[in-house]
Image 1: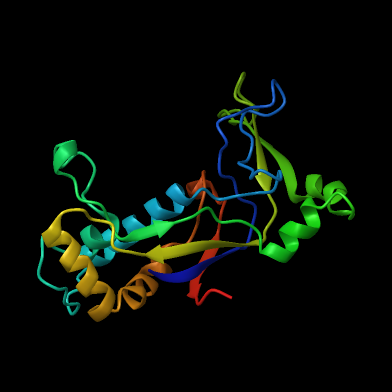
Image 2: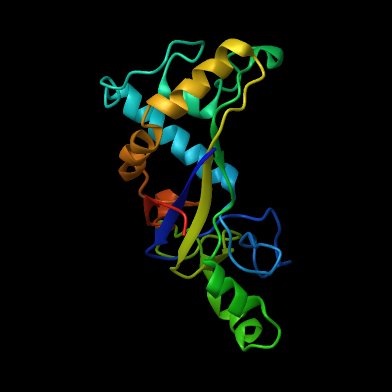
Length: 218
């Protein structure tokens, strides 16, 4: 296996939903890890990376990249597997890329989670409540449109990434093994990161502005 760390530098308020609310006060709470700290789910990051890779392929950014011969026809399929819904479940192919949840750096997590520090008292200050409502043509708030969302403060999060051989099918397994040795897949992935300018929910409303980068694990 080959590993890297994906750094997500958030420049403004952001929200990754937990699927829970806080009664009548907040309609959407931010996702937290087991210590109650902000987290970006790995499945969300993987979806953003896949979309960026697909855009790069559509715009011919990946034309000069050669892959070992095998069932995977392009970099997107090799890294992320078969596209959902395009094949029967029994015929889908696994991708090579593993994306874990993005969390605070270990030292910060340890401080904020440890009961013998001031960290637990500071955890609530990592979050803010924001409210918005629709405005009608008369400039007044429309009835029953007030919505409250819990957001997290700007911060840096880190997600472990891994490239590994995952296929049990012999031909694809050989292609994955050769790709690990021959293809510079990390450089290809790093090249599409500028296509991701925001993470989380409500990105089209200004939340989640972010800059992503890759580095070797510490």
